[in-house]
Image (cartoon, rainbow, N blue to C red; front, side):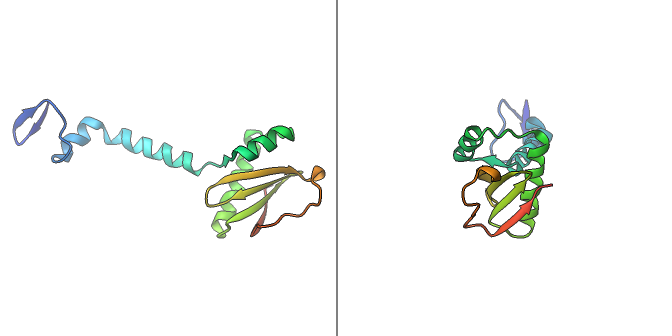
Length: 126
């Protein structure tokens, strides 16, 4: 049981003795959760549109390829990009950099005009 000012209480107070709360809730568990949560937020996401395009265009991405895209997004982010064209092998990905979200995916050989608009950068994922 926790103690507040020498009195045993059958609950953890919401406000007050933070030492007790830290001991009972385990700050380590909270910091682990925070670390995992931040790591997940840093990973790239795929919009519904992008997922449909990948499926309809029969584009499959391996873990290695996902890591290449992640690295390319990090490079674009470090340069201040907002919307970037990421080229990897024969596939182009339009990515919203602040949200780390792939908006669409196109096989370059199958794209019509090969014109990409509303982008501010191009990154080659090698």
